[in-house]
Length: 212
Image (tube, rainbow, N blue to C red; front, side, top):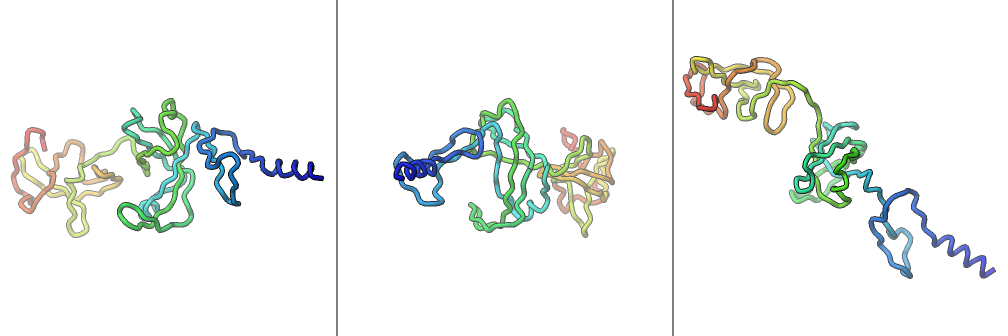
């Protein structure tokens, strides 16, 4: 009877990982008594990395499963790794950040296999750039050239005689540096950057050496 009970206790004390992988962290030591729910060990597969992060509620509304992601670590990677969003939490949570409390949505990114994947390890910090949309060809203007007037997007275009003309444009995709122009401009048009109140329709300007 005692032998059978000892065998059963030994069987129940044996912990088998439900997945193949590498022991990343052993949180207990031999002979230690633990309570139910105590973390014993962390198992993972470094060749199939996932990244979990929180996205603020405004940006999270633009994301969808399958969106491409560039994973950047300038100290370790010569070029960004590629990944895809594979999970977006159905709920938002209030979390404390360096900027104070924020409402964030958790997302999970699957990192695609790459030759330099081994340089990124669990626990490292990376920067993420989510690709919401992309085009092979687009007409772009710098962020500094766009002016909003009466809910219209306008730019000041410099003609061959250096006279400025105001043009209303339609914009499409954008990032922190450029706007895509869908209509209102053509390739080769010169636009005024950071136009102030002195820049008006019909004003003559001096074009600098860079053609701006």
